[in-house]
Figure 1 (cartoon, rainbow, N blue to C red):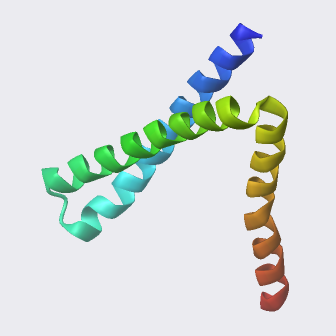
Figure 2 (cartoon, rainbow, N blue to C red; figure 1 turned 180 degrees about the vertical axis):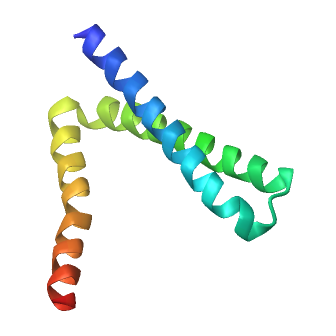
Length: 91
């Protein structure tokens, strides 16, 4: 089980780093391409990663694994519901 948790954490950090680089590459030309823009991107995504780890740790500790999984599943399906309703309006 420890290997699964470790692999999941590594994969999530790896994917977030990939998204971070793509977003930074898109907004650097728009915002001027200065080093401060890059530093702001780095700070934002690293802070987001830290907050995500904190959320996962504290929610599991306070609610337990089962309630945390249910809450997080609901949290993940909310944007999907809004996306589907928005997509229907566009047709």
